[in-house]
Amino acid sequence: MFLSSSAALAQDVVVGKLVYDMTGRELDLGLLGLAEFAPAALLVLVTGSVADRFDRRRVTALALGAEAASVGVLGWYASTEPTSVVPVFFLVMWFGAARAFAAPASRALPADIVEPERLPRVVPRYSAAWQAAVIVGPVLGGVLYSRDIRLPFVAMALLLAGSAAAVLAIRVVPHRAPAPLVVETTMESTMEAADEVAPIPERPGWRAAFEGLRFIRGHPILLGAISLDLFAVLFGGAVALLPAVAEERLGVDAVGLGWLRAAGGIGAALVTLGLAVRPVQRQVGRRLLFVVALFGVATIVLGVTRSFVVAFIAMAVLSGADAVSVFIRATLVPLVTPRDKRGRVLAVENVFIGASNELGAFESGVAGQLLGPAGAIVLGGTATLAVAASWALLFPDLRDVDRFPTS
Image 1: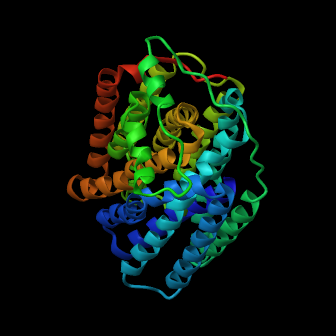
Image 2: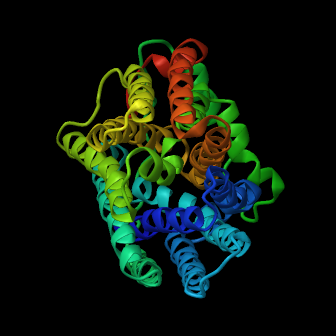
C-alpha cells in the first residue's frame, strides 16, 4: 500500500504540475481527473468480477505492473519537451485502467486476512500506510520534478514494481462471516436481505457483474455510506486546484506544492495514529456525518486564505477529517458485505470514490475556470456541508449505526 500509493500520489503532483506548466489552464487539471476516472467507470462490471473470481493478490500485482509501464512511457514523453497534453491524457487513462483492476482486489484483502472482530484494528494500520504515502509521495514527486523532469517517473515506476512484488507475499486465511450490525434502530430487514443473496456462480456473467450494484441498492447503509463520499468529495475536491492555488494565491513553486499536498498526509497520519490506538467504536453513523461536515468547513478556509501557513493547516484538518471517514467506510462496507461479493461491491465503491476524486477534480477544474480557484473551492466546501446535512435526513439507517459488525 505504501509503495503503490506513494507512486500514485507523486504522479498526481507531477502530472498536474506538468500539464499546468504546459497550458496554464485550470480546466486541464480537471480533465486529468476525468481521464483517470473514465476507465474505472467503464470497467466496473469487469473489475469486480475479476477480483471475486481470481486470486486477488495476483490481480493486484499484474495491475500494478501495468501502472508501472504507463508511468515509464509517461516519463519518456515528458523528457521530450512536449507541447501537446493529449498524449498525457491518454497515458493517464492507461494508468487509470490498471488502477481500476488493482483497487477492488487490493481493498478487499484486509477483510480477507483477519477475523471480522480484528478488522477495526487492522484498518487504521492499513490506512497508516496510505497516510504515510500521502506525505512521502507528493514531496518526493515535487522535489524530483524540480531537479529533473525524468526523475519522478523513474522513482514511481520502481515503487510500483516493488509494490507488485510485495503484494504476492500476503497470506489469505479462512475466517467466519460477521454477525449483524448493532444499531440504535432495527435492521432485521436489511440483514435478512443480505442472507438471501445467492452465492457467486463458478463462471460469473453479466448478472453476477451487476450483483454489486443490486446489493448496494438494496442496503441503505451501504448506499448511504458510499454515496456520501461520492457527493461530499465531488463538490469539495479542492486538491485538484492546488497547482493553481500554490502559484496564483500562495506564490510557491513545485516544492511548496509538494509540501502543501503533504500537509494533508500529515494531518491524516496524526488522526490515523489516534485511530490505531483508539478506533471509533460507538455512534459510527453520526461521527461519519460530522467529519464530512468538518471536511467542508476546512475546504472553505482553504479557498479564502492567501497564507501558506493557513492553507497548510486547512489541508491538514480536511485530510484528518477525511481519514476518519475513510476508516469508518473501510471498516463498515466490507463487514456488511458477504465475502463472495466484496470484490464486486468494492469495485462499485471504487467507481464512487473515483467519481468523488477524479470527477470532483473535473468539476473543480471547470468551476475554477469560471470562478477562479478561490471561488470554486469555497463553493465546493459549502456544497459539502449541504450534503452532510441532507444525508442525515435521507439515510436514517446510516445515521443511526452505533457499532461495527462483530463475530
